[in-house]
Image (cartoon, rainbow, N blue to C red; front, side):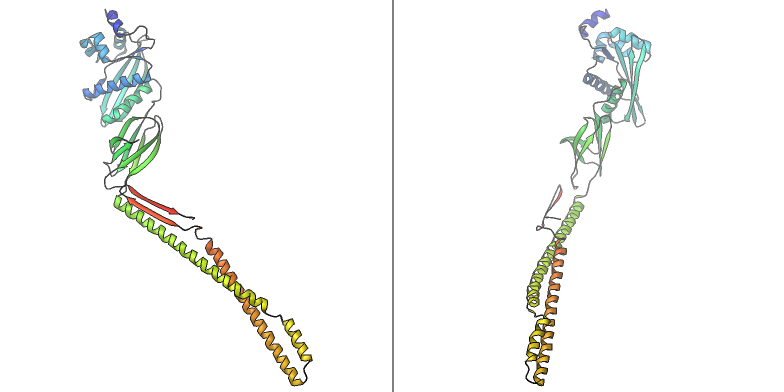
Length: 358
């Protein structure tokens, strides 16, 4: 009779092994939670694509409602083997949900009816919050078959709490926000709270590695004041560098002036030898001793004037060289191009832009 009932429900041509999922046993867990957990298991098994899954509705149709209720209390292997045989299943999966303090413990057992033995067991623990059930079911189920879940979990926390969270521009709730199943890889997180600057960041998630992202929100007024202070500091720095540029220009001009004065002076100053030769010829031509003394005094005055002119010329050139070195030194500390500073402070944050060479 049972075989006749199985024919329209289970395809003989289906080459996949048949897996019967028993209704979950609930220990200190609400019945609605157990039903939701069963649906999560069925969805996860369907995603795996390894089995033809027999759910509680199929079991009820095959065994009848009363016998299905009796099967809920069936925990030993011999009982499970009998039920699996009645269902025509190659494997039978039992699920137990137990609440222990703030923890939810999901235990799964895979039974092989042909050998009448437990094939594998797995367990997953999470905080007893509905949003975390999917993660626990998936971890336990994939662990049962020795596989790595294709998803991971993400939790976003903020200081202060209660901020809106968007993952890849999809709202997932307010902090502390939790996503039980999310694909590995890069994801963009945005955290928004009135009166605080928006925080945006990109994170990389790895399979089977739960990730918790902590975000410290900055008060918008404080953040704006800090940014404005930074902007003023940058502007002051740019202004000081412009002032140095003017100093360089002035030093360069002074160096040019000094060089322009000193070089002609030095070039036009007659040498002492030339003065001595000229005055000696005049001395030899003197007609009297007094005339010779006058010629000698003229010689000394000419030599003194020449030395003074040459010394002044050399001094001016040295000063010009100093101005030139100062131009080089100061010039190396200023931008090659004018610095342009721009700043914008909005409700979402602030932006600072500097253009020039630093």
